[in-house]
Length: 450
Image 1 (cartoon, rainbow, N blue to C red):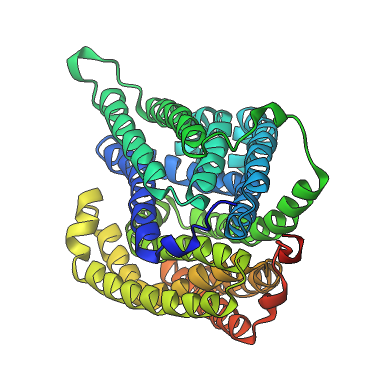
Image 2 (cartoon, rainbow, N blue to C red; image 1 turned 180 degrees about the horizontal axis):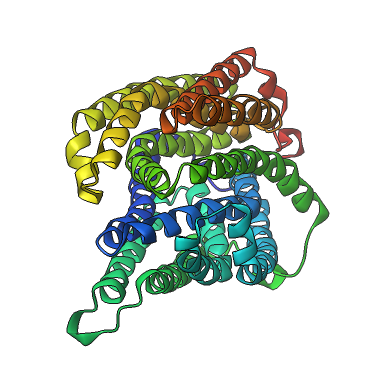
């Protein structure tokens, strides 16, 4: 039997590469926004709304990657490497076919979806072009998510980080050529940025797949690519569908809120895009800590180390809240310089500054959700976050966004009030659930079989 590697994994060793990787994924989106801001504010709004829709689609095939990550971590913690390898191959196969169907749907349905969002006509053409190109090739992102999740569950977080660095470099170089047209290169604008994003993702996936084959040292049997063992498929769905349901509900609610913002005009859409691009750099700390904690807790649960898993989640939460609060405060202090990177529009600068001040209250609440939901999910308690999430996102976030933002005419400030109420309410529920320890009996690995 192979040695259990759980004791060799630490939160810091897992988290800092995840942090860098997520940072670079965000930079890829921000590179598009920043470079397009030199081209046109309308182009920024077009890409921003399109990416909001694409993020919902990504979650729809993210359920396989999420389920695979937890099942693989628990099986590795229990020294069941053969089962972990089978689950890895199965997850890649399932996500390939599912994401290909979604890619076709996005390519042919791009304009119809954008019309539902009530997008201003002035940005409809560019938004449609971006959606058709990036959305039509979105299956590549599904494969990146799946292979990356598998590598991280095996503890190889540095690999996915290095590939993301490469993808970002390729994306920025591509953007430079298609937006600014050096050396007589034709300027393609939004369509060019979409192609640059898609090509860099494809190259990234190929490298990730080669690394996965190398790191697992023959444990992945790709001759089973078209075989779907019932017990593994059942496990993936039991974890993945509820896990993705929580995230899908969040992104769907954000789409509805973006619909509200669209009614406020192009300037409001652009302000929201700029403010949220900056906010991403705050909550990525919590995302990284949450993902690192999920890997550790998955291994600990598989190894039967219940008390260690409980303490790990609590410690991770404290770290995440402290970092989120400090980072949000620093971002507000530097709001003039940060927003000034994107625009010199005084309306955007003034509103954006106040939104970043409100973010100091928002982000600690988000830290509760990102860390505690990841912990509950890793332990096998995947349904509770979905129930609470759907109730709060739609009952609080969407309802308050309409009431304060549209009905009371507070605009983006009212919408940020809704975000704050939603994150804090859900966060408190998740912490209470963890402390009650219902998750102790919810492991997906039966250690009595070993």
